[in-house]
Image (tube, rainbow, N blue to C red; front, side, top):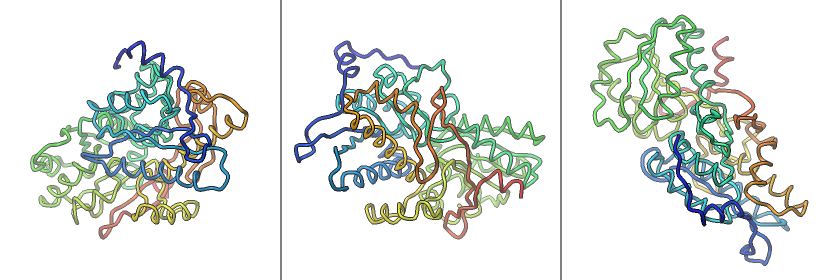
Length: 387
């Protein structure tokens, strides 16, 4: 747990923060929502997907006629880095107009900034930080609300598919030593072991310059399946080395790899990889058809991993602001946090609500497969495992 004391003056400011001002341009009210993710650096596309989803929700709200208030989105780039997360969070905390935050996107930055947001009583609603330990009460991350099933569900889904559908006997799990990777691999290992599958574990730090040795380890392991718990920036060169060495066993990775950037960087070495995500494919689901059309028109690219979930969660925050505004209530950070903890919102992708620890009150992990340079959506992984 990270404990960072805010200066007294800053603490007083953020605790009394109120989000309404008069800078909407037409003399009306404006409320400000923050957004924190990695928008540059390695694996930035995952953060950009979410930023675009949040931005589209704000644009659509503001473009409606006669809205009672406008929404402003203020972004803070943590570069998906644990060491830069605190300063990125502090930027939003120091902005007295910010009354809620979408993000952080990654598990490491979420852990590194959780104590700061809790002290500021500033709600953070994450579309994608999946490490299971983040909501442990001992952390004191009382402002964190997770808008997605955690990696207990994702790791369990991987294990179920390998054990029940593919009937594998020995699986090699490779993690990238990140908060996300270690959390996901720990769950997958436990669930595979419970299913009677032999497990071998390896750690290869993210940013490893050459994956030849790691690929050789996989080739010589005797495993009939592999799980990679890490992000696309490292999964891609790893996939290339695996292909070079002729490794043809089933390979699966999680939501950190589930992005077209994986294919762009890995080329045909990405083919036949399975990918999981506690997110559906917005380009396939009927409920997100209009969203996909609007997103593509706005950003000149199709939505990807967590774009639609970020859109939904931003609209959830806007919905709660609207309720409080209509009641004539002065909206403070603390009130928004209390309100969101109790809220329920039916979005395009799922219904969002949270339990007493801030966990997403639902489940659902989905399986994808790369074929011919494209990520194909297969469906609910638990249902597929039993079919």
